[in-house]
Image (cartoon, rainbow, N blue to C red; front, side, top):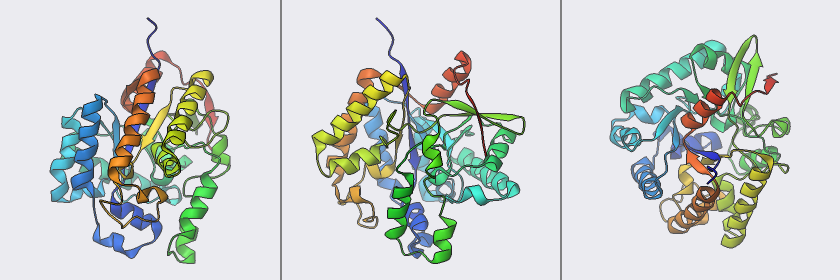
Length: 321
């Protein structure tokens, strides 16, 4: 029997305060959190499905004592851990090199102190990435980056997010790179290597639908499910078929909001899918994972990166400008 191709799954462990901060709500400064109930729910779901994934941790959450036990449970359950910065600033690309270096170093220290794992994978908040970030990742010996999101709907998503916010003009300008640009929609879907200043870095993009470059991550499928459960799963099924046709090993992105609903909190109502109850969301996530496991062997991103390097598959070199 032919072995299934692989698909990686990752989860950006964005806490409630990170969304409020990006949205321009002052309440973020109190660091409201849902990790105490959301993370055990997610880990139990993954245990049930016998799936190992990568959690990209925002290290600010690792500072608080009340989060230590629940964050430490991630590697105890066998999952991989990546760096999602310390402060979760989606404008990371405008930081100086020294500031980025300090940001990643501080995040690494906090994450390792709580989990015992030194992260070697990175994803920028809001898919923020730059030549300067690349230099720091190479300097700090990261195995891969996963910050690109080749999606033609990025500017529309940013427009909606900013429209629904309370931000000042200065704050909107600061977030002008949120989710990426039209140009980012033209980036490759298959893993490749960034090349800049005689440096290279493996890039594993968040997968969008081949040929169409529209989102297929869990939050988008959940948004579609607010109109029709069957249509949303049909959309995801079609996207995976396109991946197989195009020879793309999908890298599927999850968020905590994919597992919590309006029955848990009403603080994030500016997200359309937050009007769904958590039970319904779990049903959608279950159906998505069944479809993924039907056609692919699901792995964490460290395994995906190791396979690419061992087999020398990420041959395409892309100049970062």
